[in-house]
Amino acid sequence: MNALAADATLQPAAGLRPMREDDLDAVYAIEIEAYPFPWTPGIFRDCLRADYPAWVLHEEGRIVGYFLMSVAAGEAHVLNICIAPERQGRGHGRRLLQALMHVARGRGAERIFLEVRPSNRGAIRLYQQEGFNEIGRRPRYYPSHDGREDALVMAIELLAPE
Image (cartoon, rainbow, N blue to C red; front, side, top):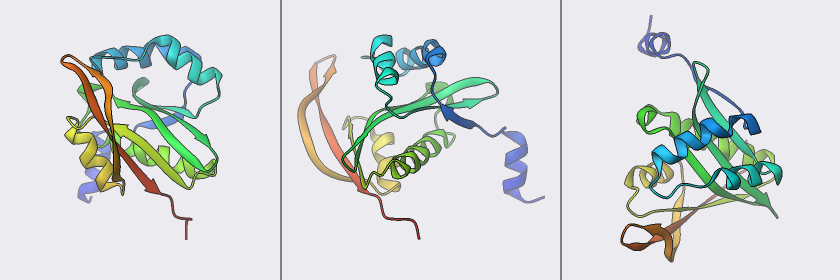
């Protein structure tokens, strides 16, 4: 048995599916655990009702991550992407980001934009590894305990699959 096969037997594969309204309690529980300034349940509900692409990552029957984005005029915008803190560092964020990019491409997006806190070094590293580049900065974009924090604006051009 090779090393990849052995790892697969130790860690059950996580699955992806569209987010449903009955997922919102679990999604919100992750949100408040992961962020000092979380979205409200109403924001998630509004995104679902607006039919924004929203997916959950589940493992062993439990939601461990999610993403929401908007897609219009050939552009996608990452609204929220999150992995439960206790499940971070296991490749789930990369899997979710790659799924987001796949869904965006399937909805006709040619590029994806996102904002990220400069203090979120792990996320920035992941985005760069997946091909995102910093294209700007939004001053005082995020709330913080010290007032406001800038956002780095990042983007990726989605190339047509070969």
